[in-house]
Image 1 (tube, rainbow, N blue to C red):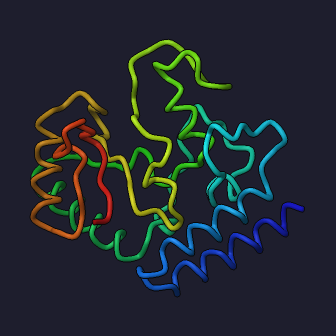
Image 2 (cartoon, rainbow, N blue to C red; image 1 turned 90 degrees about the vertical axis):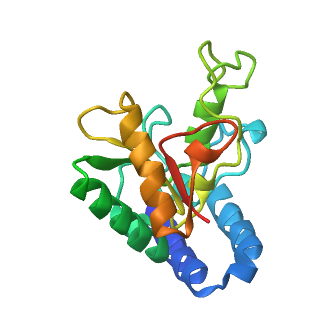
Amino acid sequence: MFPLVLVGVAVLVVVLRTRGSAQDGAATATQSSSAAETVSSDWDDEWGAPNSWDAKYPTADPKKPIPYVADDLDPTFKGLIDQVFSSMKARGYDPKVYEGGRSQRRQAYLYGQGRTDFPGYGREGSKVTWTLSSNHGAYPARAVDVISTSKAWSDQAFFTALGEEVAKVGGMTWGGSWSSKDYPHVELA
């Protein structure tokens, strides 16, 4: 069954790369139905629909990010992120992608923090996301979380510089400009 899943994901990648942005909604529906065939029996519908990341990494631990692979990024987005990273490094910063693509199971896990009654993943803590429909769920990835290699999330100057560079390059949205700030988040506009 696992090789069949990989073939399905490979076909899905080709389909998603060849469809225009006007068909993004239809591609997402195809992607979700393909992923739904691969999830385990413990899936809870309140988590949302499984996505291609659930299919590609069916045994991934939702408590940890899926390992970042640059080839899993939308090609246009990868080029823009490369420009931002180059500029950040020239300014003396050390950016790294902490998380790129995200399974719906991981999104549900993150959503469960601060919502003790959320099925399966509810737990104490500060809320870290406000949505079950993250842009991290698209395949290929159209969103990443960027942090400092040496200082992780603790350097506000790093995130200010990240926002400045994203604005200079254009074509992307920085989560630090949102009313609910998400400083590491960068996505294709």
